[in-house]
Amino acid sequence: MTSPAPLVRRFGLIHATALNMTNMIGIGPFITIPLLMSALGGPQAMLGWLVALVIVMCDGTVWSELGAALPGSGGSFGYLRHGYGAAKVGRLMGFLFVWQFVLSGPLEIASGYIGFSQYLGYIWQGITARQTMLVVTIIGLANLALLYRRITSIATITVALWIGTIVTVIVVVVTGARHFDARIAFDFPPGAFSLSLGFLMGLGTASRIGVYDYLGYYDVCYIGDEVQNPGRVIPRSILISTIAVAVIYLAINLSIIGVVPWRDFVPADSHPQSNFVVSIFMERMYGPRIATLFTAMILWTAFGSVFALLLGYSRVPYAAAKEGYFFKMFARLHPSQGFPNVSLVVLGVLSIVAGFVSLGIVIDALITTRILVQFIGQIGAVTLLRRRAPHMPRPYRMWLYPMPSLVAQRGRSRRSHGDCSTVQ
Image (cartoon, rainbow, N blue to C red):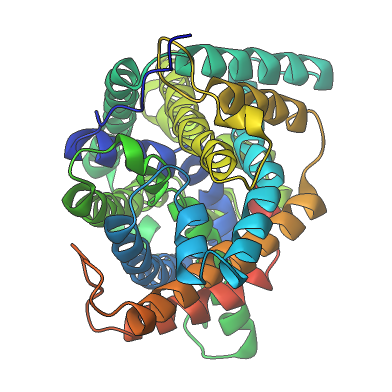
């Protein structure tokens, strides 16, 4: 019997950065602008982006150090196992991570499918619940079909989806710049910056939404065995994608609120059109036909995000199964194409099924679990590895250690106590 082909290191810096950015710029930024503005009742809510950026940049250094030193499929699974000691606590951390991930991973992907179907409502007006389920199924199967191939082809598809994402962003930003009105964009309400308890709570909500939208800057870490020169590519792709997306998010926000007054979609729950605020923005500029075409571009961007998610997440059960932490069948590779086909299909099907239910409180609980086990757990892993293995090769070392990890830990701890359902 011929052994399956090993995983191929095909992802270079461009592919890795494209993967991260495609994941980050999904449907989130286009549907959370009204939620962000509603958090503080005005454009001052963009301060939440800055708070979120600080947290994400600091957390990115954690991922970069671990990803460069311990590149491999599964990302966090390997980091937690090595950081806490594979024989004792690390085994428990790896076990906890993979089991919660098999539940929370498909739910996160499903939120993208649901966001896709909701935004489709601008084109398909009056879409019913059954029709939404049909859309979720079709998009989920299409995603699975595109990923069911060797990594060399997937790298090309990833870049193609990324290009579509960048074109979509450029159209929004250029349109906004041409019609930008500073009086509309910076129409702050009275007492916008008063340091009251309400302001601080609103800032916390805004930063939570910001962190949600930044998620994905670490996606390349899950396919570490398929990255060329991971010691250099992983840290650089995380840094480049985070900074690039921060600039893009700021530009998108200013483009929208510089044309469409924020009071037209705040509070979000009182304005149904807030679900399609970017399409409404394009409709005001160019009419419904161009807005419909642009909505299709947003849907392309949304699909690119769930594509990147399923690609990265399908490697986690595979990596765990190889090490004996999960069912053996998940360790199988396609006999000729060399990708974890069982893991991909199972997570793909679970993601489709998860798209049929209301996520709400369930997602809140699962995201909290992921933060506690994965994000905060990794911060501990960095510290333990620095103490236990000071001479371990580290192609990338965290700047100003341990300050970034402490900032990330503080920020993640606060996020774990928040309600994330507003952004689903």
